[in-house]
Image 1 (cartoon, rainbow, N blue to C red):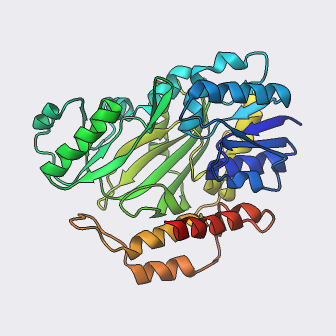
Image 2 (image 1 turned 180 degrees about the vertical axis):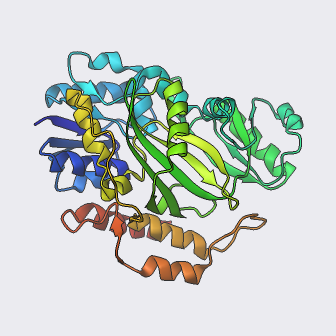
Amino acid sequence: MARILVLDGHSSAALAFTRSAGRAGHWVAVGANRGLFAPAKLSRYCQLATDYPVSTQDASEFVSAVVEFARAQSIDLIVPITDWTVQPLSEQRVRFEGICRVALPPRDSVLTAADKYQTIELARKQGIHVPCTRMVTSTSDLAGLGDMKFPVVVKDRFSVRWVEGRAVLGSVFYAFTEEELRSTVEKRLQLAGDVLVQEFAAGAGIGVSLFITDDDIFLPFQWQRIREVDPRGSASSARKSLPLDRNLMNMSYRLVHSIGFRGIVMVEYKRAADGSLNFMEINGRPWGSIGLAVASGIDYPRYYMDWCLNGTLPPRTLAYRVNITCRRVVGEMTHLSNVRKGKPENWPGAYPAFWSTLLKVAIPWYPGMRYDDLWLSDPRPALSQIMNWFRVRRKS
């Protein structure tokens, strides 16, 4: 069996990879940014925990630490999870030659998938419906937004970008007036250099996940968000598996294949009340809700690691279980906390009511329900997250 290092131990996807690798019999180490709470380190399947220099503060120092750990521990495969680590390792992947493999898509596709503006433009050119989006590099560009209606979304072009070795973390804001828009854009331009202004797209989040090789597609999977950590739009706290829409699968495959991507990927859409779809983004690295696919019968982490280690191809398709609901305990708690604050002023879309949400969140189990984090066979990660959630809020 292989020796595997899973990075970004703070993330839910890292926990999924740790458990999958451990259940497959691999030796697993889990790493995380120094000083960051990392539940995956507490998994029964983690044999060794390590801290590395904060990847978003000094990319080269972070990569050097990972190289040294891999050499000292005879690591066979490194699995970066988030943009915090995928992009630095991708840029410096040559440093791992002769030491170990790194689970990374081709370099150019990493860059393209991370670029929200470029992927929006690619989707538009392929005839995929997208929200009206403009890239702004100066406040003077705001005059050219035309008939874009408020509220608008102001988001960074990248979830994270490196400037002189340090990261500028992306953000998302909602502007309801021209004054708010100008103020928000000015602040982000100072930090990031450019920013996207996008029409607000209401609707349920839909995801299509794929395993892509040079010439083929494997293990398609589809899901829908039920609740989001921030009801205005964010990562999901609860989601369910859906029957596969093959037209949507093919559309997603053409888009991702066109950027030369290889590996596991999730393409995200918003489905409006009338059934129409808006493309939102490509997640070209392990996504936070990957545990739902595992619970539904498609163990992406295991198949991906086998492919990276041995070139072993997964089954072309698997008849996964539909209507499986997967929840994240602290995500649900944060969702409920956000709902309790009430509907934000001027919010244009539907917003959940507190008491009905409390009733839904309080139900601990029903047929078809699973948890990303809380496993009876591996309880420490989830229990530690719950304790940390309360500890953080007592301090704030």
